Amino acid sequence: MRMRYESTTEIATRPEEVWPVMTDVERWPDWLPTVASVQALDDGPPRPGVRYRLVQRRTPPAVWAVTVFAPAREFTWATRFLGARMTAEHHLEAAGGVTRVRLVLSLEGRAAPVLASIAGARMRRFVDIEATALKWRCEP
Image 1 (cartoon, one colour):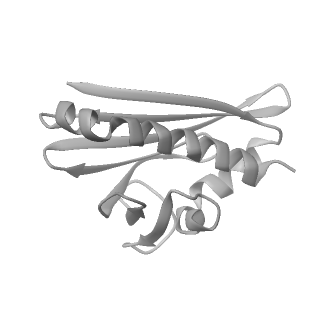
Image 2 (cartoon, rainbow, N blue to C red):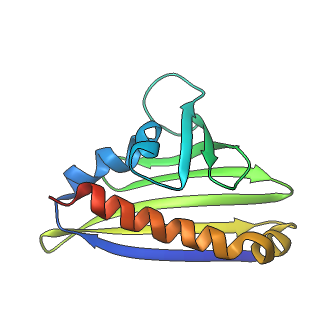
Image 3 (cartoon, rainbow, N blue to C red):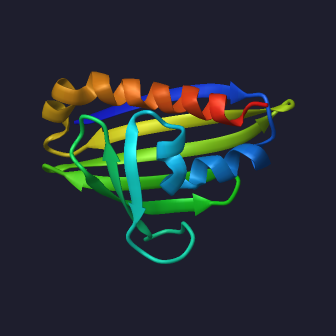
């Protein structure tokens, strides 16, 4: 079983302006209301394998590991809990003078149906809030 939710928004600035905000995850609590704290567990810049402890409001803390890091294009990380794997993709694309941001949240594994029924609406709401907050933070 798999749950997948996607949200796309356009931000009136260049990808070069959005990328550093989106990938500086330790500063997310400064502008993203759903995030209480983010702490790097490994040294160095984001890259595959680097882990972060993320605390979101009304959600248990989780350790997320970067799985894909393609500068100025894609940042993906994943976590595991209760027999499920959650993956959060962050994509950027230049689109006629704006930046198209696509956020994708996937939940898969044997516990995915139960977790989706309990927290699916909150997860989708958090993705939409992230897209809106990123737009607010990056637009001039």
